[in-house]
Length: 307
Image 1 (cartoon, rainbow, N blue to C red):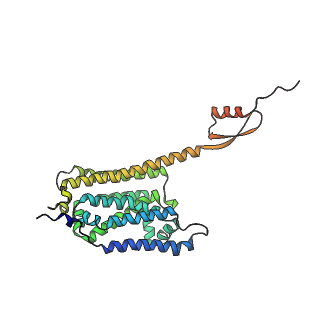
Image 2 (image 1 turned 135 degrees about the horizontal axis):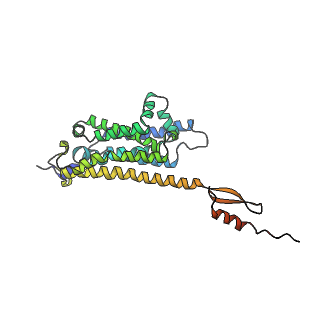
């Protein structure tokens, strides 16, 4: 007998998620009110408006991805929703929360303790990319997926690993600590490498004919979506949601870098005209014909000496 459609969306409380979300919000508020004013030089803001907005966005995304109904649909019915949940946890929430973190707070978290030192070693481009992509492949292995659906502790443990490795892999790009960020060309290469490995499980899901995950092979189907179609939607979500987002960031970074290069090659310099006057010329570093003609136009023609 098929389950009633409205039972798919029956409300289920998740107090552990509420504690996590409220705890993070409370810690951020406490850091801004009690700690920041003591460590930030007078006259400087504890956090910018932009950082506060990013934190609000990040905390709402975390709540949306971990609470009802997404958590329940992702764990019990549709693997495509489970994939979308993972995209939020790995590709969207970590960079948003890093953008929300002031430099002083980031240093307070990672400096001094053994956990912070371990995380800083992990957050370098090569180890971060290797471990992040290994976790992405592991979390799509059928044994792991089926086990996480049946075991709530394993499910939350995998989510924790995904988020921690995602924070590490985003540090070279949007770290609040400037010296941990790489150059923009290196960031583009880093993100490009991040976009390659997820295409393997994405293609595997999109092209599979049979059932890959027994835990999602249920008689009752939400919205009537067949299990194979659900798998294909999951593959497309991973490909379009993950790779397209990374490529968007790469394009933005590239144009920001080239724009900075153009501004860096345009500056003012002094040029001496034929009459001895110094004229300021704005243009590229190399002297061009246009610069010369501009100087001549600004300099009066020499006059014949009176006889």
